[in-house]
Length: 220
Image (tube, one colour):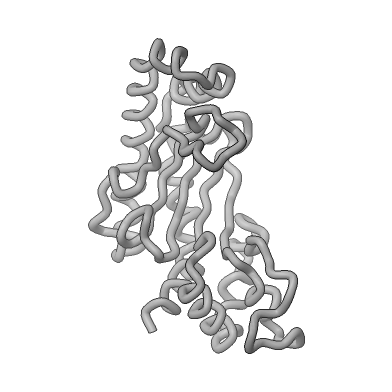
């Protein structure tokens, strides 16, 4: 389970997002980092049983740095007020679809996954897979538990139909997506419960057929 002190550190960081405060509270940062990485290791251990393709992951392959790249951002605050970890074959920089846990106190934590803004050749393969196997895709995202946890598949959508497709294609709403992602909200209270790892893994297990479908497109 996550410690309350980890959420408190992130809340305080949001209010004091500057290097001087961070340096003064570096010990608290390291405690929060170790706490989050412990959770990530437990998720990795559980995911290996759900999705064997992820068996070789290590914590360092999954966890994102707290330091922001502000070179091209209007927001010049130097740190993220959240912690995140991506679980996919090959690690967080992999082109494959995968799972994601985001810890951000104040009601912004979630467990989710899919594929976010893939390169054009990857997206082309996924669109083709959805087009060719839409009944299978529809059955996956139409499961009651999938709908209960995630609602629907989200992502920015093209305003026009991609080349080679037509507006009357029954799968066109998904073919037009530039990302295909789902997410399930995790409250601050839920994040510090002893059941948090179990709950995240159950969410990921429901997501697995969706992730597998997307990755099957990349194998062919």
